[in-house]
Length: 270
Image (cartoon, rainbow, N blue to C red; front, side, top):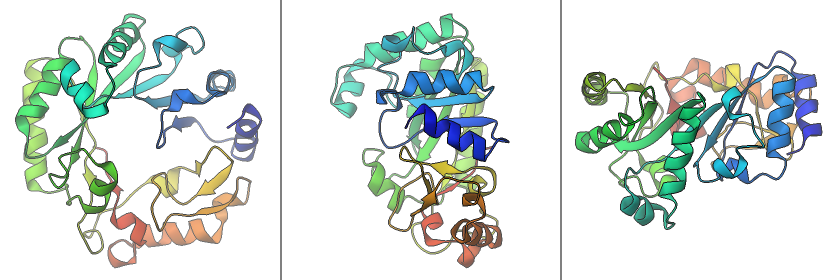
């Protein structure tokens, strides 16, 4: 992605207020990323960056971190388990980045993937966050199917998490966190094993966002799947393309009308 492409997108959609950088790869590895972030800030946009945190300190002078929102995906709270999970010994880099971001008053949140069956692991995450006053965390529920180690398999086989059990899980987490003055923001990802989503399940993405990849292609979803597709080059007419209109219509109707790619990912934030 380039600054010129960013300008093209913003010129086509001047009402955009927030830009979220995410993807299947480390955001901070982009060669033009610092220039793009600074350009977006110059144009008055809110910037959110999702990162693994390893390269934050390397770029402390290239990006005005106190002016953006940083989301660090961590998933482990000890050096040993981090190394076992990721295959690299960089836990200290992430922790140091977290400490530094907090010291400059940056808006930062740490997300952890956790099974709704594993309350003890969730409490370990909350206890970790309590070491950093004012830090908020996101507990992202995953299926026990893969124990959180294989994202692609999980995304295809996870269970529907928006149920009574998961709500009890999050209520228990909030109580444990409240006692330790930790803010927990939950992002239940509701994914059925098979068949269409339950009635009432919906997603706000296609109504509020446009997803553009690094090459300037508009896609139907931020999560690649067999059913997602590149629609066209970004432009004023992309928002009203037949593909996006059909996607919104199916999502709005819900149930069996929802596109199959949405069966694997119905995100609710509450």
